[in-house]
Length: 196
Image 1 (cartoon, rainbow, N blue to C red):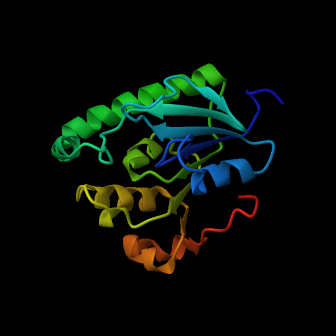
Image 2: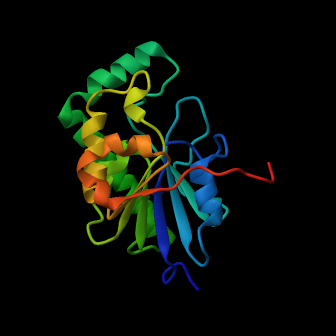
């Protein structure tokens, strides 16, 4: 099977591939064969980033810049929140991210992904760029409860929920994040890595 006829999953992750081995990495390593995966991660200041697709088990990873709401620097988080509250700046950021993503897909020989797994609400607008493929929205945490997360993330979560055909939650308490989409919800809790 060549890249042209492989089934590709786009995984829009909240964390970097080389971060802690968590739910996103577990999903990639257990996704069924013969799917290939493009693990799209937020670029991080001061860390190695994959500006072009770099190999990982089962596919590739790609780092795309986003507003750094999780930056270690409080002043950078404050700047990111102010910039993010300007819809036009978020639109420019989304446009740049989608251009980088579509260029990477073309380089990899993927004309059209078969499915999208959304874990990062900041990337929810990008899911709109793939209107004909199914989307699973995997909600791992109550992101709005984290320090430094701006209020407009609520709109991004709702956008992701509206676009998704299925929503997976790690806990029933997260149903409050998607109150108008409960018919799409499946509880898929975290497991234990026995090898670890």
